Amino acid sequence: MISPAGVPMRIAVAVKQVPETRAVRFDEATGTVVRDGVESIVNPLDLYAVETAVRLCAECGGESVAFSMGPAKAGEALREALSMGIDQAVLMSDRVFAGSDTWATAYVLAEAIRRHGPFDLIVCGERATDGDTGQVGPEVAASLEWPVVTYVNHIEAAENGFVRLTRRVETGTERLLVKTPALMTVVKETGEPRLPTLRGKQRARAAQIPTLSQRELALDTAKLGLGGSPTRVAKVFRPKVTRECERLQVRDEPAVDAASARFAEFLAERNLLP
Image (cartoon, rainbow, N blue to C red; front, side, top):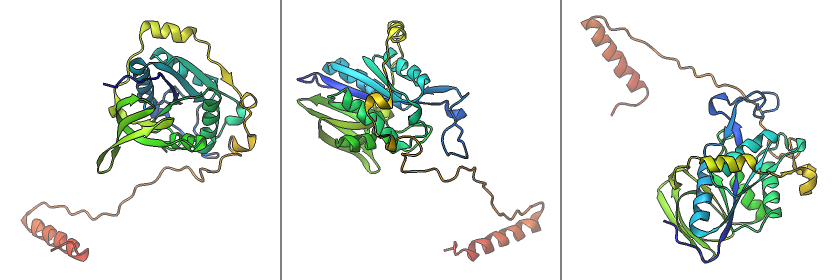
């Protein structure tokens, strides 16, 4: 359980619409994800961020706002977040955003969150299933100059301007007390995402989701799109897995002895025998 906070929290959630996992394809010329004509879904790992924000607001009081950058179709992902209990949603959509890498995407998200702030907490999924980098959350925190905690797997309490939580690390878990405002990326152990209710779906369908452009956010175009992205996908290709092997067919007793001798010789050649 999460301890009730002394003051209600405002929580921002980053949500991304991604191609259905089995349909992820890349444009080999630009190195960007192909989205046209591909079924899209909410990034599955972002649903855990949505669940975390909804649960925190329910138990501590406050308000949650989901943010997403993408084409107009990305509004569908925001409506799903609304149907799960998120209070408000904001879409950032503009042609100049197309082709943005993680740093340019984080810049847009950070400025939109700053504009709609103040917030006590930003919650992101661990990573997106299309790019699979896990960079956007920490980069948003860097843009805002906020502390960041990654791989959060349990929130123990949120009160008096602090969040007590644990995070997953290679050697086990770390227990931290984090002063807000802060950003966290969460993993699946934080809690199974709830299913939308009928009332939630009706509210999401009727909701007016504001769409903000580059001009409305007063963003620097030099930091947007392919031209403003400091990283590039140099090449997209499918690796060819080939192995040179030696096959020994054993059909009788003498062949067993020969195969055993050859196997021992193979191991000895590679210094694999004691």
